Amino acid sequence: MSRTPSSAGFVHYLRVVVTPLPPDEVLLAALRAGDEEVFARLLDGWSASMLRLARSFVSTAASAEEVVQDTWLAVFQGIGRFEGRSSLKTWVYRILVNTARKRGVREQRTVPWASLSTDDGPTVDQSRFRGPEDPYPDGWLTFPKIWPSTESEVLAREVRGVVAAALEGLPARQRVVLTLRDIDGQSADEVCSLLEISTANQRVLLHRARAAVRSHLEQYYAATTGGAS
Amino acid sequence: MTCAQLVELVTAFLEGTLDSETERRFVEHLAICEGCEIYLDQIRRSIDEVGRLRAESLSEETRDRLLDAFRNFPRDS
Ligand SMILES: [Zn+2]
Image 1 (cartoon, chains in turn purple, yellow):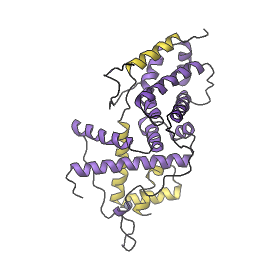
Image 2 (cartoon, rainbow over the protein chains, first blue to last red; image 1 turned 180 degrees about the vertical axis):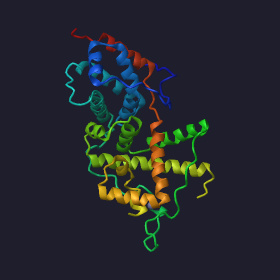
Image 3 (cartoon, chains in turn green, purple; image 1 turned 90 degrees about the vertical axis):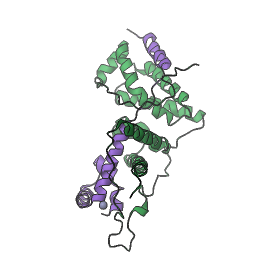
Image 4 (cartoon, rainbow over the protein chains, first blue to last red; image 1 turned 45 degrees about the vertical axis):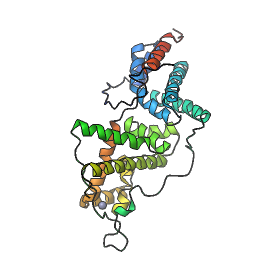
């Protein structure tokens, strides 16, 4: 299968301005009636985050793309039976997670969602804080450095590269939660129900993921601004 | 509340899930501690930066195939 070089395999860091989608009843009616324009808007609005979500379960970008495709085909098939117990988006994403999981099992890349092994331990290097004998135990030894603003386009692009790499390096569960919450803007409740994890678990994963991204950015800024601390 | 404790509560704080007593102590600490204020601000900046990322898009090929499949999917009416 040949792939279009302009769109396959590249990560686009575009801030896409998306007009808000109509409410679920309208979307559903349009999908059931075969409204192509509405479907195209859904496809363009959701595919990026669906790809990223799929990518957490399967091993290649091509595989993730097939998961997204199979998900939509399953959506066409099931749309007549969708009862609106969850939002349309949650329903679609749940199909995606199931599809991706099955495929991930085949590719032997399973993400242990149910695993009780919580990611624990502090998210900030403990050497940043004062010791127990200090008059201010557990206070900052030195304050974090204030980051420069990223007004310049060059710097902004570099920062996005740092953040993308940080995201890529996260453990799968953290990456999925961060993607859904902070890229895709889903609510904590939506993410919990989608991934079938507890509120507390969701928060821990999100917290660790955000702290990791902050730490990457801190290192980057320290390096680019001369590293004085 | 110490700085080391506060940094572990920022997500719960931003989610609004701290109990009111803990939230009060969090805010009190924040009011007098520049380091934690900067830290919280950096977490917000990190969230914003993550929000600027976009995943790769579907290939034109797959997009066209799906639009086609949608168009030709058998419907009742
Ligand atoms: Zn502090």
